[in-house]
Length: 380
Image (cartoon, rainbow, N blue to C red; front, side):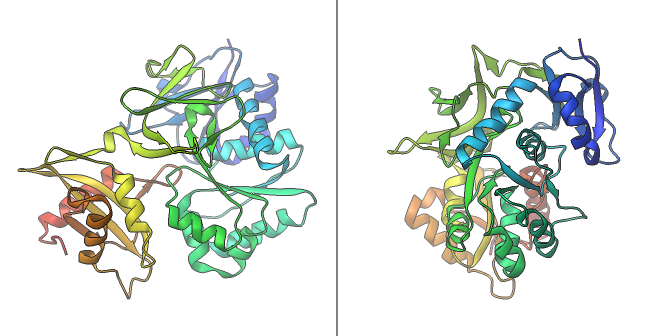
């Protein structure tokens, strides 16, 4: 067995090399000031190099156990897809898998990563950190969540100019709206959408295409299952029933496009059943976010006494001073997807609540919208 030690995220890089080559303990990265849950501590098998804490959708802490071999396989497959090793800029928290992978790729490339420091994400700080990375020879990469990309595009200037100079910009942690991706690529950003999770050492499907060695299938109910050398060894502190016969069975719904690429439709437990009709939030969000006056949108189901659930949307205007018309947005969704998909309630909000590495906190948003309704703020 091997010792597992909790490491504050600023110190992860210094201990990561020894964790990967077996000369040091396995690591459990935690945020600064946090304490590792007792259920996640204790010895692990010799092959485990990393345990990544994740609350998932239930809020119960789990530790995803990742072997050194799986972590290396993921990093090497990423470099193979992007065009070779390079220098990375860390713009994500290294206690989440996407941030840790930036550090692992840097170790394997033999390159010291740049690190974006400070509280919050500011385009000006990103520009400063990026310059130090871009001044080095070779290829240059970074990894962002869509919210960071939104801010860089909205701000423009030095931050966006620096972003466009990277040879590859991975986007993960949350779905990237098609319109946002189009805007980024039109601005010269070499954006690559990624799909994966801690259980797959991070992103393992890039732009809808699995990385080398990764296999994707859709189960009978449309849920995505993943296989390959990047799979986790199981969980600490939770059942590993999602792993079976060499596959990880996700709770995400997907479909294959005519060209074979995978499109992720969202989590199965986010599916809205309104009046007996199944409404995939991702499809509605795609229509809303395609509008120039919509910066971000999140669609969710709220309790309704007659329909079971009511389709509701929280929309962040691109310009708070000139917000979009909810009735126009509702009509657009109805025209493209059908009346059952059109949000019966649309709230204009300054920002969406987030959790973890840039994911929308749907629970917090639902509670916020219910409280707004209780306060007399109703559909516009």
